[in-house]
Length: 420
Image (tube, rainbow, N blue to C red; front, top):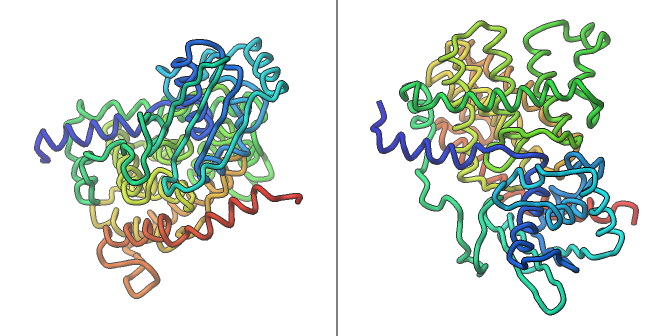
């Protein structure tokens, strides 16, 4: 068994990376930064200047803001200033009221908000908000992670949240998830409560593209049947539909992304229920899934050109593999099968159609687990897969973090010039 000190470090890391969030984490982080700047100002701002890194801008442009029926950054910023509380972190707007929405709309109509692309920085997650009233002006900055406030940003020297975190590898992830005392890791069950509830919430309305509902309808059942596979896809897509469509519900995020949290949770929960796994097996599978995603994000970064569903689906694949009775070697094979398939899927912002990408990721997760349990694995003679599972993961993250940089720039350029 892993020693207690190491277990405590891993648990602290999980508690930091797996947290509740309402709505898409990028506009919520901008609202959070606005709320903090407003608190520093001590009064309602008359004007708000916002400077964002390209990846924040990309991820916040097309997503619904919970409870508002509106899309994009302006309403998130206005509400952050009007009713946001920084102590709530990524649930910053949970005190939302109909009156606040109307005030926010008026704030926008009065053209009090200016949003800019922050030039000359390499940090992919950067938010700077300057609020002013009369002669008073205050600034707040978030950098490195979605809730990491920094006093002063200097290129290359900014505070990086989690810089002293334990560095993971696949063996450590697996051993921790499968051997840690159950009472130490039972808290991960909260991800099921949050994220499966989001799937149920989707049934109460028409959110996003209704992908989850569509998979449950007669036409789709005639194609997929009532299989575990179709149930996994439907429950995962439904939760994403609700979240991206603006439902006022919290989800449990992973590494700063609610969709990653959903994707690492719901497939594992559905499979465990229908496969009649024990409660302990579910807890360990959820821990394995979430911690695998956290491990991959350590070298990929919080935001990148690579779609986060690739990362989280690798997590759910290893969780499902474990529930199928797989051991460490089976888990490693599932990871390699995933990397051989999904590498290169672009992130073109947070939006309702993210449910389509999540469906692709989850489908591949199940397929990769099945292949692994049959003893099948993509070999090191094929593509970017290496004999070493950790090297395979780092090949994936090197492509996402470095190799796809030009792709990221082009995606943002296309998104910001459509119709021109």
